[in-house]
Amino acid sequence: MRVLARMAAGALALVALAAATPADSPVNVPEPDGLWTGPQRGYTPATLEGATVIDGKRLAAMMPDKPVLLDVVVADRKPANFPADRPWLPTHRSIPGAVWMPGAGVAPLAPEREALFFRRVEELTGGDTSKAIVTFCRPECWGSWNAGRRLALRGYSNVHWFPEGVEGWQDDHDTAVVKPDPAWAALAPIEPER
Image (cartoon, rainbow, N blue to C red; front, side):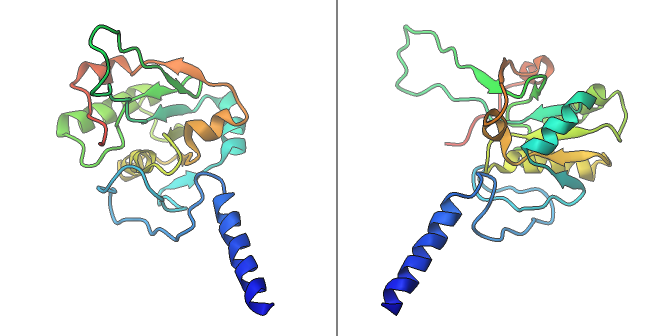
């Protein structure tokens, strides 16, 4: 009976881990010293030095103050077997008002791409390094963590990381179709991971 009770307790613990919110990690992931250069998908730290980690309720409370919303979700890749005679028309849904810079959280980022990232953030904040900025992508995505880290390392003092991402937002709020930021899209696209 004790063995069965222990097995049941272990199973309940696994269920609790599976029921955790998408951004919750069942493992303790330490923050890297700099940017994460590994795969973009995977468990992320619970913290981001130099930034505030927020949930959907906190983000909703911030919205009336119009923070800069930086969506760094990597753009969908056209499937290799997609019929050549059909148009490829992917859409990306995001938090309304977000600026979508596909792949801006990749590391390393090409120097011209990184310079453009900082230039666009400077334009979006009006040069105010204390303006609230929220970085996000998908749950368990290092891209938004890296984007937040880049900004904190650059001296932005009001950075917020929303690890629940677009999916966490749409659990309780509407999303909107967004197009890539025109300046960002003008450079060669960042290839998604295979």
